[in-house]
Amino acid sequence: MKITRRKHVINYIVKQRKYERYLEIGVRDPSLNFDYIKCSCKDGVDPDSKSNCKYVMTSDDFFEKISKYKMYDIIFIDGLHLYKQVLRDIENSLNHLNPKGTIVVHDCNPISKKAQLEDRNEVKKWNGTVWKSFALLRMSREDLEMYVVDVNQGCGIIRRGSQKLFKKKYKDKLNYNFLKRNRKKLLNLCSAKKFCEKERNKSK
Image 1: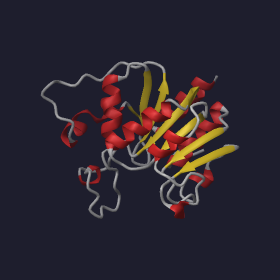
Image 2: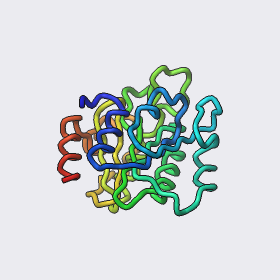
Image 3: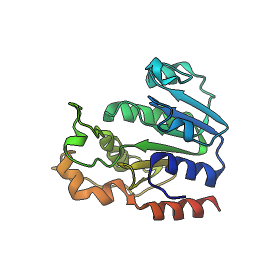
Image 4: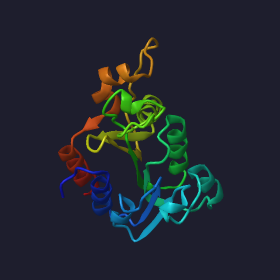
């Protein structure tokens, strides 16, 4: 399988780890990603009724309403692209993730300074400030395993595990210049080929 899109990343993980239960936050148009995911049980969350997903509501409402015992093998986060919301989505997802499960976060590697502004302003390819949520966890959560697959504006992988934290100097500001200087180490970037190797080795 050639890994170029988010659906390829998700399906590769699903295949290697034999996952069955999938949740997508931010479905919007199911034909773009949701319909392609090869899991036997799939749930989608989106506040737009046109998304035709099971849970027509915000992700905050979804996590507040579902049973604390409802768990997923893999959760894809592609909702509101603002870092505070993405942080909440990640934290809530960890509470509903099976012990050996995976979270995939889209838009972690913005393609330009303009693409990562909070205000979309009709930007065609808008990544928002998702990268900041990933960066903040890379600096603070030693109990997670994190890296970004360098395809499709960055697909962040998050699992329970361990990692060496990225150390930010006290003078550094979390802005695009900081990302440019530290992109590879901050995001723990890896190629599609390296991603496949990682997943094959982990699933053995």
